[in-house]
Image (tube, rainbow, N blue to C red; front, side):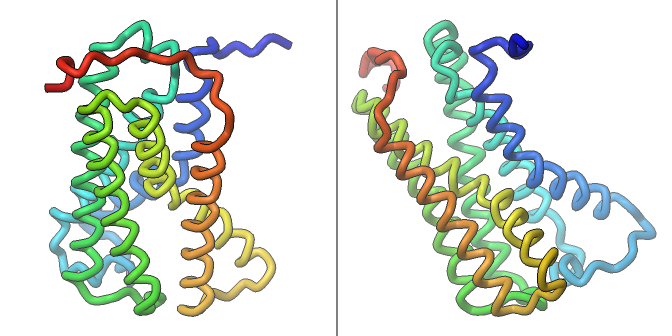
Length: 221
């Protein structure tokens, strides 16, 4: 049976599909915030009604995942270079702000009931790693180093989409143990990050059949 999805859209659709768990969490959180008679959620009440940074983090993270997913289609990059540059820069800004706002959510508010020092340290580290990877990707494309730009953006996307992997491993854990403690939650959150980074590094080092795109330095000045 022929695949109904055009070839140039398959990678973006796959990546957005992998992002559905964070998107679903985003929608549920925003609906909860918009509901005047919402049932108190221990994971949310720690913010004390200060939703601005949380909403910004959710929306910016979702924007980054959507826009970044379309950057991985070689056909779209080649045929629509202006769109690629503009949407890529918007994605970089959104991803950087999502990483920094995620750090603020960890350090500026009381920890959740399942949080541990290791978990919060990891979240701060990977929030900084997300912003740092995007900064390095931007620096690479400024000097027309496309392979380095691609590698750092793959790392950034892997970090940003780690929520999907973490939800999967937590779901599998709960299916067998039916309990989640701070220690097991920390281990599973860590495992989600490790899996994504491992896959990202494997993909970066795998032989690439993507056509080389010549990027004039002046286009990014």
